[in-house]
Image 1 (tube, rainbow, N blue to C red):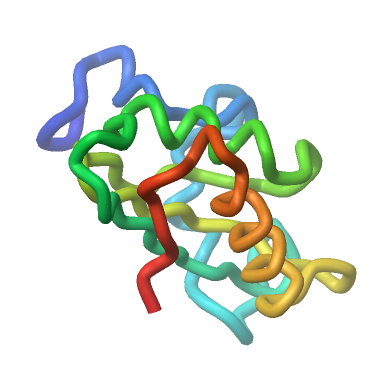
Image 2: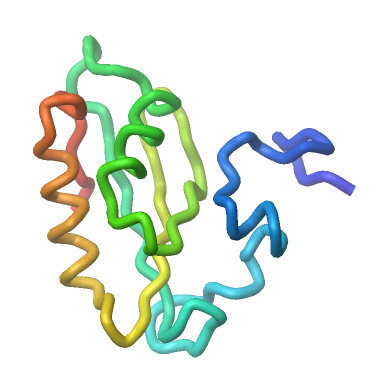
Length: 118
């Protein structure tokens, strides 16, 4: 059975982990809860502030490529003007580290016109 908005082949935004192990939805419950990733997750939202900037479908790929490759990152929703990423936490990765890395990635010229939503 597929969820609304998906096909039998998924949304097209699955990580390699999800492809091998499922959607991961059952593994992430928020900061402070033990999960398969460690100690929780952070959900970050990026929004397009400039209509001439690339849309979310392109931006999510660029954004993910600028984050550390070993982080478990899952696009939770991707629209033309808004992206929600779920990033798993562990003993070495805390919410402040994630926020700094995302801020640094969004400062890249390839992501001009996008900003993190507070």
